[in-house]
Image (tube, rainbow over all chains, first blue to last red; front, side, top):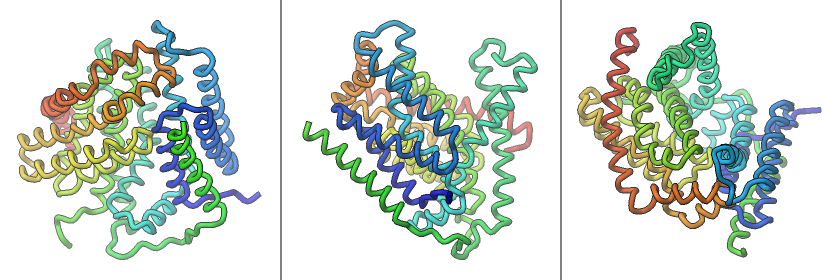
Length: 234
Length: 196
């Protein structure tokens, strides 16, 4: 089967709509239903692009938090343990939909496509280049951080001798060192390939909005409007 | 070529440091789920811990616009991660002012840099905006969202329309204090290694 690839602009629109939906509190059943439906869509899209493991992981995590929160927790819950569980569930239920969408958009978009989409939307180069670097950098930071953690554990200083400031210092400084170095290499590589050249950027692959893109955008637009309207109707 | 124009290398630097600052913010943010007083203490925690990457960033800033672009990026990331757009104007305006202050010192004067970092730290208060502006809704949302009533009461006792002024001032004060901490750390580690 041919992979279903959405246009980066559609993905951005999905993120935008999703942020609107997760930001406003959901009171009624209809709103909850909309929220769940729009969360399922990116999970399905991930599967269509062949990211089964991640899709299943997100789905299970989200479902577990939703069920826990809905059936076992209430205003009366007190105590440290339930506070922790509550905190965890709220993070997941509140931010997971946006996280899933963002993860989907980042992992399935090639940087080149992202740049030409930004160009088509007339976003200034400065913002789009920096944003592309940020997107690319989160996985790098995570990787570097894990390496540093391993190295520290091998030397038995993972807890920094029990001092909080040391724990932060021993981790943050090496991560910053590697990030600065990686950044230098990255900019050297990018400039060699013509980033920041004073001519208009062209792409090998022409981006076009297809029927699927319009359909996805329509679904998200309608969900957002319904979600907002449901609050006023009550 | 105009020397003051931002180049590709600068944009990449901005991207890297934005990612680092955001990681710090995110790590501190996780503490907020333990107790609401931690949420109020963001104004102390984030300026001080975040100052370490920020001070290194300031040593790389030489042109106008870099701090402003960083604030725009932070606003975008905050929006995408579900914090809403209410704080966006505050973030971008404080970034712009911070940029102007740093420019006045020619991006070299430490006095101006410290002040600029203080102003830049105002963006942290953007986290509180949804709590204050939509207080009633937000409370109901939290309770529906499974937070206990204890948590909510504590949260609203530290963050409301009255305390926001204090929080804003604390942001600036600890931003300036953080600048000194960050400067010391940068000097200790990075200048020795010859990265700056």
